[in-house]
Image (tube, rainbow, N blue to C red; front, side):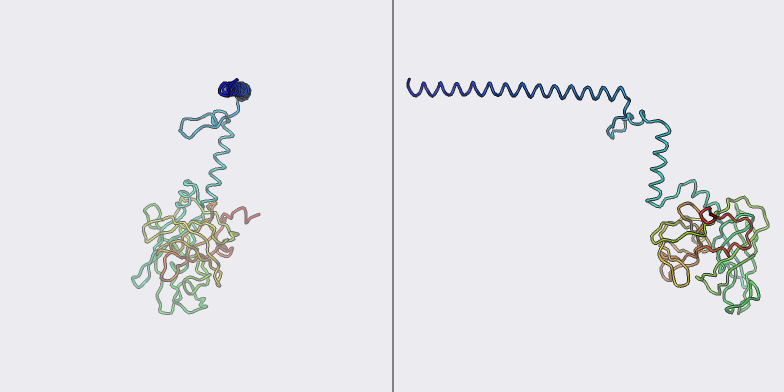
Amino acid sequence: MSRPVLFTAITAMLALACFAIGSYWGARHALASDTRIDTLRSELASLRRNDVARATGTSGRGDAVSAALSEEVRSTMVADIKKQLQAEMGLLPLQLLKSRKESFVELYSYDDRGGSSYGTAGYLGGGYFITVKHAVVALDGKPGSSAGFDDTRDGRKISSIKLMYRGRALRARVVDHGDATAEVDPGDWAVLKVQDQVDLPALTVDLSYPYDFADPIFRLGNDYSKGIILSTGYVGQRTGNDLVTCLTDGHPGVSGGGVLNREGALVGIPVGRMQGDYRFSFILPLRAEMFRRVPDVKIAELMAN
């Protein structure tokens, strides 16, 4: 047999062998694929029979998950998600914010020299309001004076205090106050009383708020005498005289307003700001003595327990 003929024969035999091997493995692969497809079909059929929820895309049309979950489970999931978002972002529910905003009123005071000032007061119930002393008492008196609310060095006196309630100016009087002789002081607080009947939601007081660094807080006050305005911020650190710094707006008029925690409880009152910088405020944490003449003040359960 000549070499060309032999070479051709060997080549043909190798080609036939490769074809046979390829056909064999192709058949096995096809069989395996068919087996996997059948298995997947069986699993999908089982899922449908057992009503197991299926994931869907984000096209806005998929409702397979919702359809498979009960109403109770969905409600629980939504509530948990909202709670987590509020905790992580420092948010308060809008309805709660609206209710708390209604607990604060604009405050205006007038002295016997023709001067006037404005601030904020928070409602405690029973006609009682809490605010800052420097908004309702002249603080330019001698340190340690105990002759009365209006004892001042130059004779200036606060002659009138009015709280704005639904378009009306209600006359208020001071029933208690701290021992501050200057602004931005731990004793810079006062309690007012009105004789008129008022229908406002009373604030809940939390005396145990820890003021942890960077915790979110909410400030409500008569910002620039434009009405009660909300501002958010974060806790800073305690000062040497037991006040707390806060990263939030300290605009004129917010003194005496409310500082709320994430549960909406009153935890402090703004008393001043960093000189030359409205972004930093000073907060006076609440103390039990501030409410010694306020009957039936609502104390948060955390403190009561």
